[in-house]
Length: 394
Image 1 (tube, rainbow, N blue to C red):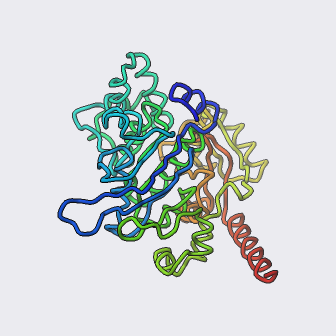
Image 2 (image 1 turned 90 degrees about the vertical axis):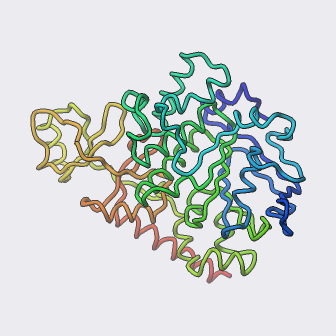
Image 3 (image 1 turned 45 degrees about the horizontal axis):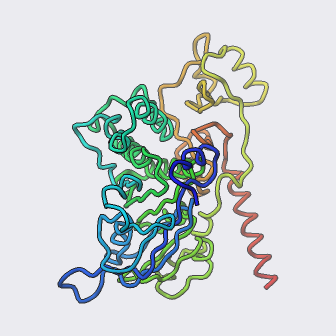
């Protein structure tokens, strides 16, 4: 397995930098309680995957998560990360090598963004230049300009920005494992979608092992390589890939938890990356306005995608809005979607756009193209026809 010194090199190369987690007969029995909160939980979480823990309130999903980094001590059983028993090192030492992200980011209000992110690297003895470089790299990774945000305080950030900083702090020491407890539960739906997309983009690049607790089955379907559905006492109702859980629920509990609309939910498994994107006219900030308008009109476009110097989309103005001699960065924020976003997310974004489409981005928010209603409906129709053919074949 990958050793700690090799993890950074592996992640930079796009390989798996996460570590396997194995839980064997894990029990948590609280004093005075007749029934264990977690009872004989056994589970293997593959390296480099996102595994979502879902289930009703009180089922033990958060307790199970916290036992991995010993925020809660197991009563019995064994938990191993990369083959090593978590009890073979002190809780403090363990937690310095396991990232932890909770709802709202949980930032220290008296510390700047940089100071919040730098906590664990400094505890590990990194020098000042290493820490500063790491903070800049991580802010860029989570979509925050290091120049603008490293010196700000949490009170100066929106809820979504605070959560981004929380994710950056969880990644600060390049840990193989990231634990996330309802990380996006305290933000509005649009911000929640964007944070989910950013997590998928980050994971595509870093390939950590991420264990995430959520109460939202739709979020679990979107983010999870695998989903663990728990019943009371952290009893495993089903542990499988999203497609299998939607197609063949293991029992009535799973079927009820997933909901009657599981056939519709299966549409959320379809990703933007599966749909052919449009390539409308683009322009770089600083380009000649007259030349951009000429190119757009020749292409039959009434608007252009404006990109910054790093090929990130920053605006989608109509031609009539382009003024002056050169293209400037628009002042209004552009809502993008990641290529791993679901088609449901794409439709939601398109409905709020005056262009009847959505701008699609990849790693580090790099521009990929535009998705429109025609492409989505065509893909959904093809999925339905394929499903009907498969049913007829059976």
